[in-house]
Every structure is written in C-alpha cells, then in structure tokens.
Amino acid sequence: MPPITRRTCLKRGALALAAHSLPILFVRSSTDAADAPEGEPSEAENSALAQIAGQFLEQFNAPGLSVAVAVHGQLVYQKAFGFADNAQREPLTSAHLFRIASVTKPITSTCIFTLIEQGKLGLNDLVFGPRGLLQFDFGKNYPEIINDITIHHLLTHTAGGWEKGHGDPMFENPALGQKDLIERTLHSVPLKFPPGQHFGYSNFGYCILGRVIEKLSAHPYVEAVQQHVLSKCGISGMRLGGNTLAQKAKGEVGYRGQHGENPYGMNVTRMDSHGGWIATPTDLVQFALRVDDFDSPPDILRHDTLQSMITASTANPGYACGWAVNRVHNWWHNGSLPGVTTIVVRTSRGLCWAGFTNTRADGIDPALDELMWKMARAVPAWHA
Image (cartoon, rainbow, N blue to C red; front, side, top):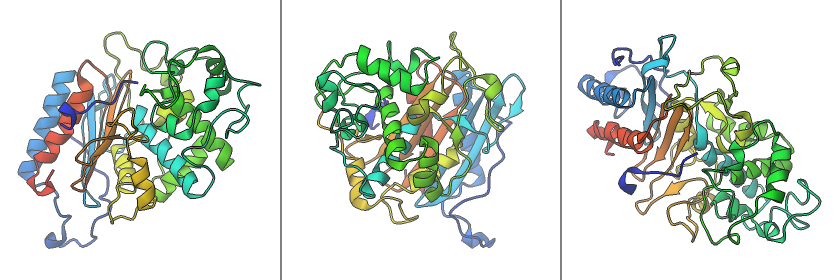
C-alpha cells in the first residue's frame, strides 16, 4: 500500500446514477423542518456536490464514488455516484461495501489502545524474545535486533524495516498463511535500521500487531476488533474481504483494475490487520466520530489515550500511531490497493468524513483527498 499522502500536506458517464442514501445517523428525529440536521446540504449544494463527484469519476475513469460526512457528531451527508460494478452497470448505493485497504490501520491501532486501557500491555512493551508479548511464537530464536522492537515501533512504522513497495512481505508468497509468513520474514528479511530510528511504512508491522491483539485478547483478530472497537461504535456490517471475485461478499462492489493491475490476485484475507476489512464510508465515519476527541458522541477511548494515539514519533512528525497527523490537529489515513482507493479524515473543526472509489489510478490518492475537501467546502455551513 502507498505512503500516506495529503493535499499539499495539510493541504461517466453516470453522474445521473447518484445514490440512494441510508437513514441519517446521530440526528434529531423530529420531522419539523426547523429540526432538520444542522448543515444538511440544500438542493443547490447537493447539485454542486454531484458535479464535483462527476468530474472526479470522469477524470479517473472510476466506476463509482461513495462518500459520507459528519459535522459535530451528526451525519449530514452520505451519497454514492456511478456504478458498484462497471461490467454489470449496477448503480452504486451508500450501502455498498468496499475494501478499505490501509484505512484498516487506525482501527487496528484503536484496538491496541483499548487493550492498553485494560492494562494488558504498554506502548513500550517488547514484542519478540524472552521478554516479549509474542515471545517465541514465530520461531525458537530471532536475530538479536528483532528483540528490541516495541509495540510503539510497530504502531509508528519505526521498527526498522519490512517496508512497503518492492519486497513488501505482505505481497510476497501469497500461498503462505500468516504464521508461516511471519516466521519466514523474521528469519530471512533483516532489519535495515535499529528500531526507533527510521520511519518506513510497514504493512508487515501491522500484521504483527494483529497477532498481538489475538494473543492478549484470546480471540481471533476479527472478533477482538468487533468486540473492542466496532460494536462500541455501533458498527455491525464490517467484515474481512475475500481474495477472489468468487469470494466477493454480498453487497460488495466490483473493483476495476487499471494499467494491468488485478484486484483479485492478492491474499486480502491475510492482510486482516493492515488492510483486510470491507466497509461503507458511513461505517468509517461512525468509527472516526468515536475516536475524534470531541464530546459528542462519546469516545470509546479516554482523552489521554487518544492524545497518546495521535502523538507523532520523533522519526516522522507526520505520522502517529495508525494516523497521519499535522500541525493544525487534523488526523487521517488513506488506503490503496489494486482496484480501490480510500480515505478517512477527522478535522480539528469537528468534521469527520470518508470517501471510497472502486478503482486505483495514477494520482488518484491526493485527488481523492482534494475531492473530499472540495466537497466539504462546497457547503458553507460545514465550516470546513
């Protein structure tokens, strides 16, 4: 998966097939117009939002785009544009599921921090070796340097190696299960730097965090996340994605590969804790609202825990524990796999949003971020 991008860091046909929306969440129940959700777009603003979406779809030859926006704890906008499946010309709706790719990482990080609040581990706990949380679960011994890796190193991508890109362990040997892949990698792929000194975005590091969650929670990763995170956020429809087209879940979009990419040629299930979930943008907004450090709705982690989670490492001031961060106190994460591009954002002004599209193309990562900011600013009442 690609590195975290941000618009200048902070900073087809089928527009007519705009979306069916799900029921509004976190809003007042009265039908009186005066009690409509604050910030719900006007007819003219909805038209402008649809035009922005249509331009994005055309620019990137994307089948569909699904977005959700919450303002001060209320979901005020959720729309889908274009197609869920380009081949079948199935209209996309807000209920369709997408692979969320690396947007999984904030979820895994949050689960780790719930275990920290329960007193089951600490950020500076070692992971491997005789004093480590996983001890020798993946081999009788390890290279000595691996015994120095802590939970914080894995959360902040500062373990010292196993980086994304060519040779990323999570995209090698797709037939291997997690245990065999981890054991092989620990013993055959040496670290390039001492732990804690260098930022190197590592999907493999988050795969290891999934195994930590399993051991300390005594549940499979998916069950642990559902229990400690998703259920507390009111999310019930998220699940792990399948690998092949035949394993596509009910209600899941079809993915359009570009430039020879095959969306169905990866071991997505093995990616569980770094990129394996499927969800709707509304699911991710519901999640972001419960870890945004604002009063309403109540967060699932304490204020001090959240502050620890979004504190950047000394190796990279732009990345904390599962979240990219900046000086104006926004935090976010993007995700990318063949056939899908995603982003979730929490802003310091009290907005949370998510945007998913079922393709990947050159330049689409920063463009999706820019698209969501453009949409947010198209409704002045949102004060983006």
